[in-house]
Image 1: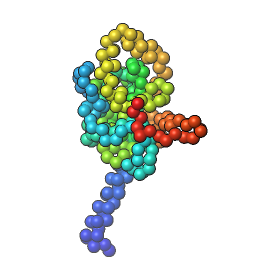
Image 2: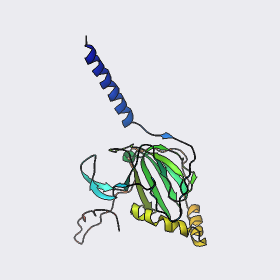
Image 3: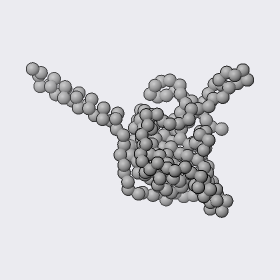
Image 4: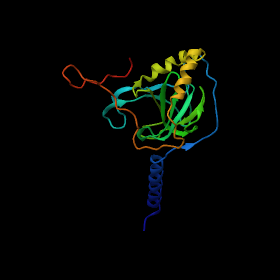
Length: 233
């Protein structure tokens, strides 16, 4: 028979293993409360307010694998369940598990015709097909997917599937917001909405991130060019 101290250690080890497995398999949850934070048109915000950059977009040494890889977005520091905001008006096009990104929310912004993907969420507050306004809470920060700790991953893409430097987009958001007061921008937004494909309103889970591969291009001799340190222009 096991002695009492050894029994205690065995039980604690079993509980720890159970909790670790549960955390690894955690798929997030739906928090449907509608929350909107007013954002000034002339202020620059990140999806987590005035979040601090912890890892830039571009090629880097991955903190989990220790290998060089392409980082499709910017990582922003956050605390567990910090509110995650939509920076521009748009339509939610996809919600669900997205491979290494964990729980993610994708939003299409008809003006300026870009898509944003926010990953590693602990919870999501929107569903596919919903219209969301600037300042709307779309989820809550977490560490789902391949992650070393709580943070928010933010990817920006154009309609050709090309990556846009996320911090450049974030800095330009106030200009886009002011432009939306013009008839020209409103017309462009209306036309882009009409061209949108039908949205599947169900949650979509995938074992891959479902993102386009990075493009390094080739030199004059046809060899692959070395990847840039970042995707900043």
